[in-house]
Length: 365
Image (cartoon, rainbow, N blue to C red; front, top):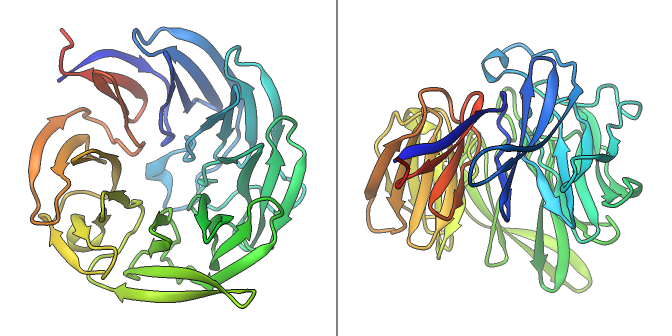
């Protein structure tokens, strides 16, 4: 497999986003954050926008740099990006024109967490939902996607490095958000609180992975705190949360797990990095791969396989089976760190490394 094209786009962990013949990329060059629109087939620039983004890296985060950590979202012709400094922007996806931006800098002591805003924007109907704020204070806020006007806000907790997700439980459409204090759920339309479960950051153990939702249950993993299955229930007019199982053999640090069929695949930070497969019904760990894999893995779930991009530039194709760890293929796709989620496209895969975006193809000459 070789790159069909490669473009220097800048640093950061945002995933490339594909829509039709276009690929969008949010990154950082110098003191500016840059939003790219490229031709998927050739890598040629369709449009490019940039804006100055001052940011000081918090102690211990120097390795991760000052590039954006949140991935963009696209809906109804609008591209939404979240800067590392906590600025949410809406762009015209065709022209690149800025439609609106919000940063809530005047609402909280600081508009972003110590190591930078990392929660990706969630588009839910005609709203875009983001947890704004900093360590110790913030709010989950829904904005009108067309205008940026605030529709509702919930709570006063600071955000975590996780992203909100939309789910449906018992006919109720909910936004599930893991903030720095608790796993919470609110009504999608009103922002009204439905249920919550305390699950706070402890010491240096951060709330980072985005929860996985499957078969009515939320699967939540935390650094040094194992993995648990939570089942929200609505009975007698009230919501409650039941812990179905808890296991401590594997734990998620920064990597979010994915479902493939009826199995959960993830990356535990124990044993210096180890892939695993787990039965989400029982919590039983079905297999664990070799240790010392790396610091982070981002996943794609495709029929029959799990694509795992390790932060060292190695792309692993894993059979989506619970019987045993089975590596089907392995490719070296970068010599620099690869923390951004890859994107599978017809005839290849998009990989964002330290500062470039490349389309890797088995048929490239």
